[in-house]
Length: 288
Image 1 (cartoon, rainbow, N blue to C red):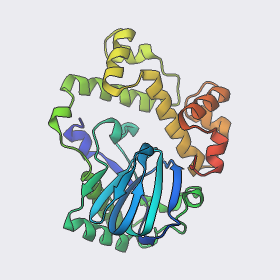
Image 2: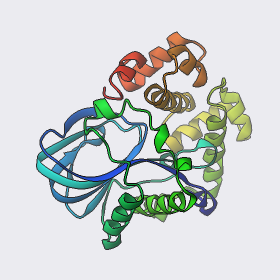
Image 3: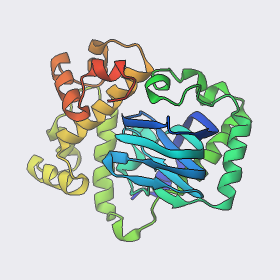
Image 4: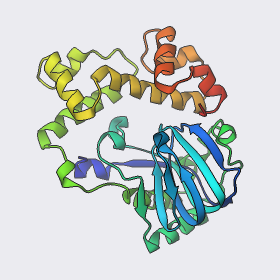
């Protein structure tokens, strides 16, 4: 569903990467992170549970846990893996998971092991101090940002992340939307992303698509599975989750930054979508 032009403009940002061996202490439930994770398993046995669906971790495979995915982790005895925590977005803040179908498990290529080794070599200071998400997700990652690195390191890091990330993009032409629907939904996503902190009226989205509000709502839901306001609130809460974990911004300020017309409404929608209040989410560092 992503056009070649948009593919060229995917931006990535690294947060953490390292190789580690874990034991039975790697046993966490209900983790929601504002960044995505890629694991390359080298030895042992474990499980991830994205959206409460158990997936066995097998040596020689790559695994992707998208950002804002409710997930659990479990190690049977001992598990060795490379890990990468990163963010990614398309122009104007669009999310790639809104644009195309992604796999969660793929067979690693021989070069992927070398790519991870090189990634670690040029980003040797980005290992996690703690494996407990309840601890490390509370930290701000501002010191890990790409602009703090030399140009050649930044360029090579971005290239490696994009190569690893590309393994998960499904190239199923049968699931590709017709060009007319691609244009419709991409314009909607772009408008929502650009006006997330403002009041977004369905009439404005419908006018952008040159159709009535009823027709727009039906078409949007058919493509995304959600009504427009459900999608907008989902994106606002995702942004709020990121701000809660990565900043010390007040709840009132976050509610304003994410486009809610009142802090009370923001709190109610946050709890409806995430299962916890914003205060609980911040206190638990993303663990809910």
